[in-house]
Image (cartoon, rainbow, N blue to C red; front, side):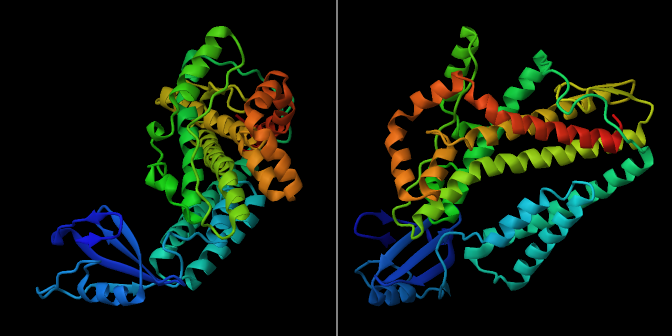
Length: 413
């Protein structure tokens, strides 16, 4: 039995994982228990902690008479939540650019150095488990990107393309019913990645409130707002107005976090950053698909591959419809996540950029943004329907055009 001043938990002895973590603080000892599917933490006096570690029985008056196995105790010098370090994060960020021909080799080398150096120096503790996993992901992602980069350079040399037909942003959007259906699915996935990025970064910063609400997940049902994600876009489509929507915001409680402003900036950046990482992963997959088509199916007739039109046609070729569907999903993922990231970085409440602006710059600017925040949705609507966001999306359009130029230069498709 585990009993505090506010609550009591009864746990079967068979369910104990016998994994206890202890941290010394100025107020006493923080003792955290880990079970198979639960986690409990208590702040107790040092005398009570000694009794606890002897009998594994918090706050129980009756003596423990049964002989029991001595629990395995680990004293932690760091925080009780999984801690994320800068090196693994930068490894993943740099590794996401490793698929670029030539230039990606420098990004890949830097990513591998950061990840391997961190793994050699970091201890195998529970607090650093997420950071070590992130470093391993960075290494795997970087190696995959370098393989795509080498393959694309080989295809470019073999093809010998020297020009590019048309402008960098050529082609209309050309949405078909299939492309619209795919876009809806990709939008739900992208929103889940965006909100999950906020939640897990808050957890890494020391606030596990969003995690306790089940927001550290890619399940769209945990992030969908019934009105903002479903009802509002449908109403705007029926009214013939420009469509927008929103997911359920991730709540944060950063009052106990020491570096509050830094934590808020990181949490706000995590959403758009996760969308950019997803767009980079899709771009790597799209470039790989183009290289494989160029090498293994040179006789196939491919259209719309290096344009921003979502639907790609590949014929005549066995499995062509499947490859067309894969190409459509990848193109939609690139475009939607790129625009979603740029959209959320605009410093207008309630977008993520407003929180970055409020906490990154001097407090006078922060107070101004905080004063505008209650009326932020009105400001957002005025900016949205006044086509202010069109100016912001122009650089994203050109970046998308440069990527398709790169695809055409490497594949000729």
